Image 1: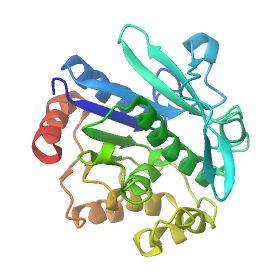
Image 2 (image 1 turned 180 degrees about the horizontal axis):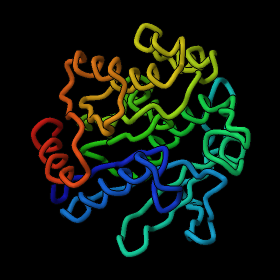
Image 3 (image 1 turned 90 degrees about the horizontal axis):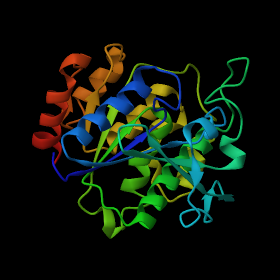
Image 4 (image 1 turned 45 degrees about the vertical axis):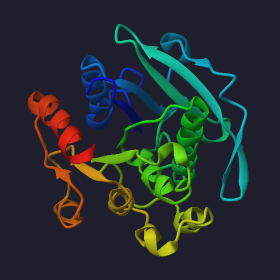
Length: 268
């Protein structure tokens, strides 16, 4: 994987958030490619419960300052950056006071999902792409982890389809076990189609539950990795029937060789 450029876009990454399936793999996979001589960058949201001082986040003024439109509202984009200690891996944080200042990730103190999680996902997807454009850094692969990042493949294939920068970029989605119950805002489909995404391409978002959000991500990806043993049978069947190259679940001790081989033979 030497000199291949891979952009990792994730809902959660250690050491910035607590350890779970998504946050651990979102660290382990980039580290593996970094160790193989690949060029990597990681993007994640800058949630309010990330300790900026401890992790030495700082704002990148030259990348910040643009406004992104979400559901016909202008939302300022703030970009922060930090380095994972000892690994020489740069992590970029997508920030906005309205969406990411609250001191938690996806739910309030009562465990109730934030009502604007759909807009946060749209803002995150657009923020990543706009920042990568400003960096003028062309990824060979974009690898998406976690449902908060799941709108990125949709926006890449529609909203940003004419961006020459990404003409040869391949998108991989890792699918994990169900991480929330219920649905996001039932107006989510309307907000996505506002951005000229054809409704028939994202019709699953009419009921924006975890599985349907992941289906939209899978449909707009070039390849899929089943990253958890606990993926539902219905979602597994959807992946198998999608005609996309897909990698079945691999235990952690074997993933390095298998993921690298999958990138080389099925994605690139």
